Length: 174
Image (cartoon, rainbow, N blue to C red; front, side):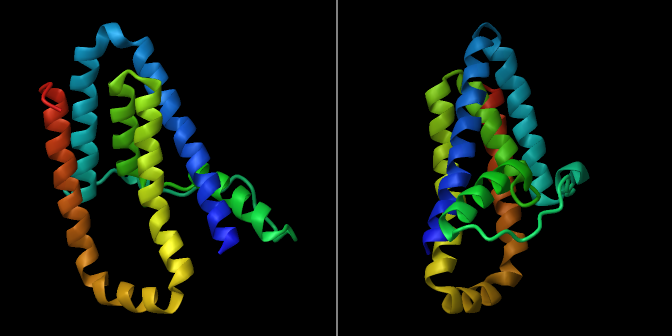
């Protein structure tokens, strides 16, 4: 459990910093805020369509490995932290469209702390399943097997929510 907590910490640190950076860049481009909201809204719509499967973005579903890691003997605390840092930097196939949309919202906010807050909330939501699995491994596997058939529909519904959010952002109503 301690290793999982440090994994979540590493994941959250990187996502928080990404949100802070996106918000900072957005604040530097504040004078172009209206145009950026239209562009970012369109990007979020595109990410939502990718989530629904209507407009697949295959480049977001690729995996690249630059380094082949051998198993090292690190204490669970440190290995969990480093794994969380690496995971949040390098592994995005399941989070690609969602993370891209939230980073876009962070940049559109034009506020570094708001961007960091958005990504912190995202990291909490992203980390909760890891924590729940760590606590309830056996029970979680049974539940996941039961809901597996519904997962494509859950992803499609979330994609439609992103499409709506992108449209609202582009129209200045978000």
